Image 1 (cartoon, rainbow, N blue to C red):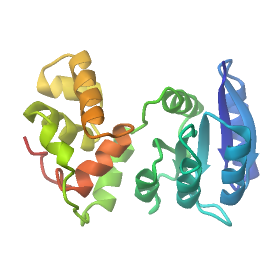
Image 2: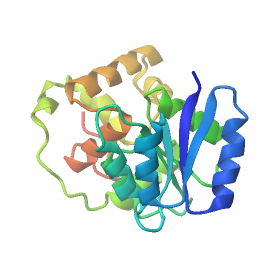
Image 3: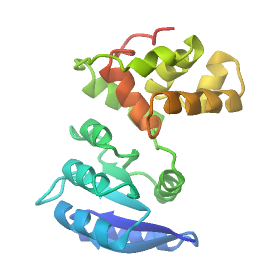
Length: 223
């Protein structure tokens, strides 16, 4: 079955361009569009898409609030892929906190949009390293550290090390190279981390790692 996508952006040309790119794929179908945040929430409930491609700055309801509202509609909700500009929207980190599964640059090439939709629809998260690292530095210089969840104590030393590297924006391949292990081993570690910490995906793991002080910008992750 095709991946059902809802496009939420206040610019008609952007929505049209995204729709043309996605509808050219055999496994992706654009099922609706929304020109503001309130409409995006309503259409997400009505159309039951697999993925919502969500702009950040929209009238009536911004993308962060719309993301939060879409994901609060029930258990079987779509995944949200946030779209932002290269100069780092101040709302992006808030969108990740709200439950977005990743973000994409508006000036990314068409194939990146297609890949992002497929990745998010498959239940994974999209953390583009070249943007993630900059985001973390920009929005976590003074993180409001909260008490680490009790489940954090259940992680092994290696799992804590992997979590720290994930929080730095490293891909599984980069982590495998740094730790001199296989990609499959890293994938297993990440899966166990998510399970033990009761997290939905990699994005939530990054947010948690910074919010609880496990990792701080500019410093190597603790072992």
